[in-house]
Image (cartoon, rainbow, N blue to C red; front, side):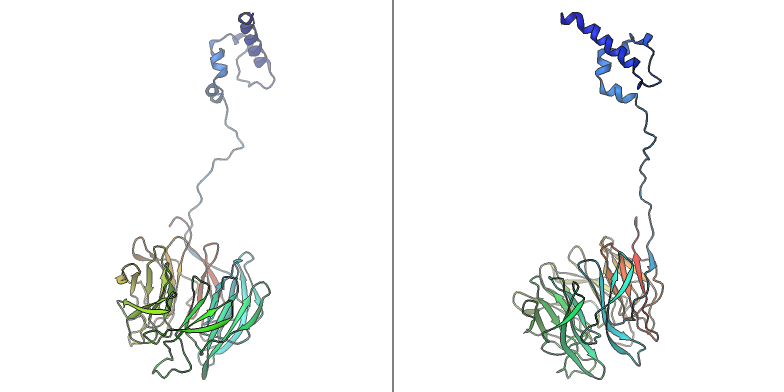
Length: 417
């Protein structure tokens, strides 16, 4: 019986399909329903069914994103002018700007003012001022999200030994333990274990000629709020750089003085180890940037000699402990900033050149080992800061000149470069 009813059932399905109101206007007429193209193999074939579908007019073909060029954008003025200040990217994406100098070089006023930049709102908001006015201090983001501000130069007086903590949740500053000696122009590095290593800077006990500097170092414990002295460096330094390397040591380079020796601090032993000499005297005002491959890029600086800022650059390889000179920057710079971008390149901006600040910027590409010009900021800056934001843009804040500015601007690295 099944062999008799199968052809009839198939014919009925075909006829109903042809008579359906939802059938396409291009479907064959009932008279053509016996065409071989409507046999069982064709009805069951998904390939044939797809072949007669028409494109959906509501679907818009996707297009590749437009390529944008690097550019600078104004982002509104800060509440207060800042120079020789600190900026810290908080865990929630806001930026804390604290302290610094205002007014001209002959009558600089130390400031305790602090404010917050909210990228999502493109707005500046004053927050509680620091307990003490500070410039040449350091600001370190701690593992619990608080910010440690330590030290300060003080005009015609010894540097400050005091330190304080900013709590982003309450917007308040609270005092913490004092350092073992006053410091300004020092460095502060967050170690993997959560402690903070403070190195060099102007110190109360210095009897060295030239800018005050020290070879001492100490550690801050966030748990106890106390400072503990650690071993001293081989050189007294101020205006130097300190870079945390991937395997834990801290690389210290340069500072006021004409020495080439660099050294490493080992947190596990508390010892300082010489690690070769740089290819050029860096002095103060150079930058040190940890690259994605673990090497460190040194650029510019001013040894304090009569020839002024340098354009030279070099790389430190922690694996071999060697320094290698590379192509120089396009412009000599001291007091500039160097920011590692999200794509691995390094953005260098501003600085000082024989008393003037160059209103230019350039990029270092580790994969090519060379420098290229990029878009220039709106104006020249000195004693300013650069902060990489969560959206991959770079925020510039502050300046120090006869009319210390409260201006700020953003660098957009663009796409497709």
